[in-house]
Image (spheres, rainbow, N blue to C red):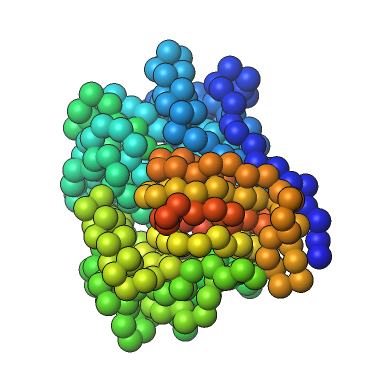
Length: 366
């Protein structure tokens, strides 16, 4: 049994911060456009504790951003990944991140997202546009031009970002390639439900509705994904945007309840994935090389992290740190760190955004 520095830290206010200029190095800080010249960092990503960001703290961050006229607040900086709030009131310059994937969750407001095409002088030539609103989720792979226009008052989104330049021989920890060749990125998928990825047809049952990834909920000794019986994901991450509207997300959760599913893998990238998780009883998990960011979607409970583990991976009572988990709360869980829920009432659903941290020359979790 390994002991961990038990901790679950709430992110502080914008007052105690590091401010970085427009020349922040490569890796996950690439490709900032207008309004991102000043990025405030709240803290560096820990390896020995989780971070809880309740909705009340998020609301305070938005007030602070308005007062300081910030468009980007980097709540967690991990060097090769980061977790941010983006808040804009006008159209932004088209952006391209060569090695960085984005996962957005819209928190406030609405606008129009354009992706694809080419970028000339900060403007789109071609591409596809569609509205985005509160509750929508969108995946933007590395190298895809993207930008927001048509802002109605403001638009604010949680922006979880990770670099995709893993070594070619790095072992996938977050997921698998379902028989595809390992390497940078996964299958080259089209926009939500589009063409079959290059490099082979999807596995049987990989359709949007019927190919739901099934992990059956985390077991007490959850060392990795959870229960067996992992099925095909709904989509494969690749070169195109994957847009998941709030209505589609709500439909997935209803379907999970009807089918008693514990995990729906919406996007599989081999070394990253995006899931809806659902549990109806306490659970524990542990991922050796994979970090998680959670957004609570429905229900609630008590999140527990940093606890000692029993021989079969369960939680030792009286160890670790707990925090309430309710709709809208955000959690960051470092790799190599026990986590789970010690109470659930009556169930809890969360968006689970996961990526591997076994980058070249990247500090290993202790």
